[in-house]
Amino acid sequence: MEALKQELKERIIEVLNLEDITPSDIQDTDALFGDGLGLDSIDALELIVLLDKEYGIKLADPKQGKEIFQSVETMAAFIAENRTKL
Amino acid sequence: MYAINKFINIRKDAIFENGTCVYQNEDEGFSAFMKKVYKERGLAYPKFYKMDDLCKLAFMAADLLLEGDNEKDIALLLSNREASLDTDLKHQQTIQDAAAYFPSPSVFVYTLPNITIGEISIRHGLKSESAFFIADRFPAERMQQYAEYLLNSQKAQKVLCGWVHFMNGEYRADFYLVDSRGLLTHTMEHINEITK
Image (cartoon, rainbow over all chains, first blue to last red; front, side):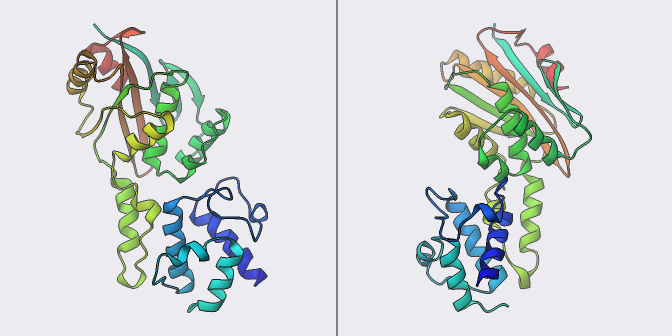
């Protein structure tokens, strides 16, 4: 799980072009939206594409995103349970 | 008679303000050059890094042009030859292969040239008249007439006019601000000189 969290932090920084942020700047439980990393609605869509492209997970209900994308920790738990790509 | 208050030219080798070089490019690519200027100017606008190259170019030219200007009623008239083709092609690459069909939302949102106007408007808090013209070359006469119409009819207090070109790593921006008074008279001769 720790390796997955680290990988996720690197992917998030890369696909969302988070300049001047390193994986060590993101705590596992930091909020990704709102006061945390300050991501926006386009970033949320990009995270949905990330789940599909890298982990083979298609979100059937976009409302799920609110729970899944709370933090790196919640994302990693969801991916570990639902991934179809290793 | 209206005036050209200030003008900015961004080229591969340097950035000029009213004809004077203000940033020299040390042979860097576009992204590195823009990042360097962003850092040197002490900007704190993380969304800049998420923009496509055309928007970064327009954003930087407008930021230099409007620095210290508190007017909010500034119309935006931009033009280029290829619209958002550079980003359109990047988007197309993500949907080319049916087996790997992963269009990127953050690329797709920049597949319209007038998003440049949106980014400038958000940055400077403008809710003004705007238009983006696609033309083979800078439509100087149309820009002059349109800018003066906007000012004469009180639809704007100032007008930002500009050519913003980015394609395959080649780029240039020529932006100028039309005002009631300023550096140069708002004549075809001066517009052509700034955008030649």
